[in-house]
Length: 183
Image (cartoon, rainbow, N blue to C red; front, side, top):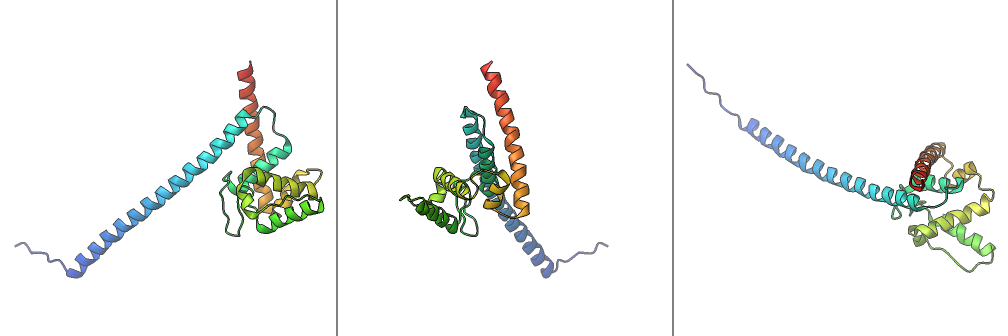
């Protein structure tokens, strides 16, 4: 004689809750995946514009330009709208004190021009501010000193150096492509 199994209400409720939690987790992970895809697409756009600008450049990159790109790659991954958690903005992740120091240097030089923190979002002005500070504190454009003036952390120097090597490899590829096109 077959026995009839009976469902307990608690078991059914647990199964329903389990199913709902799985649906909610699936929706959550789908949303996270969508955000990750958007983030990756945005980074790809920044990288594409960077490589496009390299492709159109007629002269080889100087060591100083390589350093600038490596710092930008480390700081913001070429995102001019990057905002850090400590009030740092733009491609170089410049903080308000950085901008204030640039204005102090301009004042010492007798120049009327002044920067604002908002200028950190402007690529050209960010580069100007970086070069202004470096020319004041690192007039010989020493690469290691340039990295230290941006960030003194040992992990930072290591990451910038890795990015310098990467950019130099990309520069070699660009030169090879240019020479093959020219021949």
